[in-house]
Image (cartoon, rainbow, N blue to C red; front, side, top):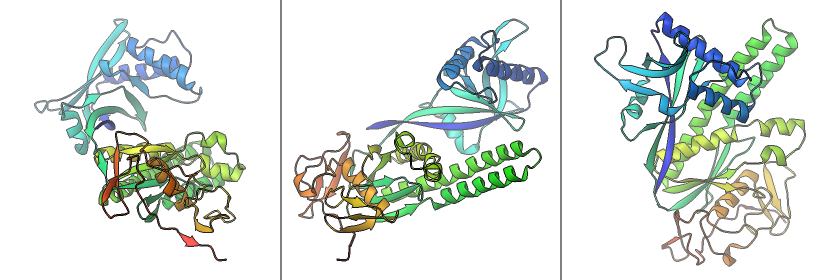
Length: 393
């Protein structure tokens, strides 16, 4: 089984001649005019089409700048060790006002050493990319796409529940061995939130610019932490040859309105980015990573399937039918894992079969006889899970 993986390589333009720098600046400015409604802006024709798509799909605010979208059939990157100025060159499409038509210029670029193999691999294909202007420098974010092989059979399921306190809680479905990941993400976000508040109250000179720089630094710090969490999750799955499943957070911002304080904590957490990074890293590791509908997983008892539960303390879930007293995130992650292998969380384990969400993925778990059995068999796999901490009578 194969999955497509995309990787973004940030290459930096350098040693630009005055003419080339002027053409790039003119193209960038004309693109901003086009995405904000100027239909007469002179652009390379393919780039002008992309500007129209950005305007119709994103409806960007007037005070924002958008990266120039470069269509993949109009760009090229080549490696040449024989040139003195640079060993990497990028062909950039621009509009030439002197000839009043589209043109292309070759510009020298620096490619990070760790990413050179991506651009030298013949199996790689360059997708639509972006020209970005940041801190007075020009960058091209090259999007590389390739196909990687992922395994078809696994010995366990690592279920991941995303939340506000912990960006990820991971549980193996075979024995409910659980780890909590990403407390640093919440701490970083709270730290920068308080910084912005203090700057706003103090009315610092050029406060808007300072807050913008803080936002950039926060974004970079949070993304670094997300990569660390994803690495931890993939490493856990690798130890037991487990398929990774995670709760699909679609609709969270619309279906949950629990007041300003809770909304601020949950609605701004980078769940989509976490899911994208985790999926990408899992596929690179050769294992499947699947989203699972997590609706009702947090309020359902994983042991008996009842929704007669309560969360008097946010970190705990209590079942009033079977007496379960368990960690709330661990309970949710277990339900996500059970749903992934087709076990209906509204039914006892002994009465349902197991069908994997995507039949092409074969999950193999230990049965009652001690032998390994496929989880997507129509027969009961006899999977026994530990039952958490019993509630005192």
